[in-house]
Each structure stands twice: as C-alpha cells, then as structure tokens.
Length: 320
Image (cartoon, rainbow, N blue to C red):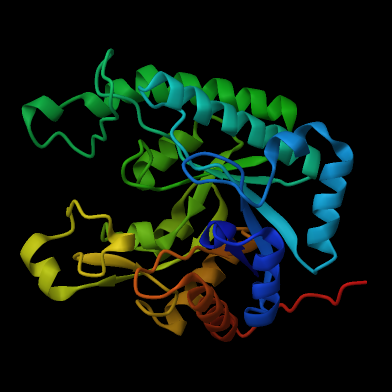
C-alpha cells in the first residue's frame, strides 16, 4: 500500500512548496492526488495548458517524478448534475477534461462525486433525498436516479471507455450526492465497469456504517482516502448525527473530521489498509479536514501514523 496526500490540503502553497513540505515532514508519502476542477480550486495543475501543450505536460510530470513522487489520481469532485445550468456545465466540463488529462498523463484513477440534481424538473437548487421520511420526500431519489444519474453516467462512462480504456472513475460515498452508501454505490457501479468507489472511511463512520464491512463487500473499489472522525459526546447527545453545521470548520459539532489516528487506533487502520490491499487498491491518500489541526501538522502526523500502523513505510527513491 502506497501512501499519498490529497493536495487540496495545501491550496495556499505552490506545488513546489507543497512537495518541499512533504519531503521534509512526511517521508512515507509517495503519491499525489491532484485537484483539477470541481468544487475546489486547482492551483497545482494548469489543466488547460497541460491539455494542449505536450512539453508543459512533460515538464510538469518530470518535476514531480524527479522529486520522488507520482500522481496516483486526479480529483475533480463536483456536481455534474446540478440544476444550476452554469454550475452543471462547468463541473461536467471539468470532469470530461479530467478524463482527457488522465489519458494524456497516463493516470488511471479519477476521484469524483456522482452528483445530485434538483428534486423536480424546474428546481433551481439541489435536493438531497436520503429517505422518504415524510410524504413530500417520497419518491424523489427514484426520480433523480432514473431521470438524471442513470442517463448522465451511462453516457459519461461510455465516453470515458473510448478515451481511456484503463481508467476508473472512483466516486466518494458522500451524503449530499446520490451515492452515499453501499446500496447506492452498487447501483452506480452496475452502470458500467469503469465506475467504482473511492472509499473514505470518515464518511462512513459518521453515518454509523462499518468501513471494514463496506470495503470487503462493495462490488468495485478503486481508490481510498485516509481521514478519521471523532464524535463529540455532549453535542451528539443534544443534536444527533443529522446536524446542519459544516463540521470541518466547527470543532463543536456533534462529529468532526479528524487526523488519521485521532478517532480510531492503529489496529483498525492496519485492518482497513489490509482489506483495501486485498481488493486491489494500491494507494490511499491522506485527506486533511481536521478543524483542530493545521494541514502541515495533520498530514505529517497522519503519514507517520499510517506508516507505523502498517509497518511498511515506503520512502521515496532519491532523485536522479
């Protein structure tokens, strides 16, 4: 299992600065998951230039590989089903460009999101339907699936197969999208053989799912994130898991994302990476969203923890 990092943690740093930091503080990290569009900015990759300039692509890749790193995945997490026409168009373009760029770079994993449309035709905002608890929620998920998810991803998967036959598009099981648990991922993966899961245990922990069971049983797992969760007992007792706060920035929410190892111990993470390896997953990328720890310290702590937990740290080869 190789260890990587989602470079979104370092949006305030240039690519060179981020690589310098990783080399100095997280020697177990060899892989990079590079943002190329979607919700987050992409300061570490000039997508348009790399798409159209072979020499720029070569220079960009050579600069990464000369430092002992490799690009394991491109991240384009967005909402290509958004009812806002402009946002939908932009995220769809970003996703298709990511497929093209992955083909040109020889990268075989894209991390994305399945997306979420409006509840009814004409809606101007996204409607996430996690269950028909009340009459006005009944049937929305089925309509969204039939009218938006299935046709969009059937076409996109076919185009991807033609463009880059060995590429897997790995979507996060993420509440707020139409794919957020095992049942919805299985339906999604059944659309085409190049659609898979990007497994982030933190998104499962707070839904009270068991990531070890999910990892062992999903039809197709192509990539993984390393991120933990802590439950804050007093707020949890008062407000439960369905809390409206944005937990990555609010340390007093009922649950918050956490640096790897702060929520679950070494034995658990050793078991998780072992299950991933059995499923053929070769790289796990540290994603930092802990509101209590800055990114530089959080990524370094997570990398050291994972290396010790798996007892198999992979140190980069010296440049040259």
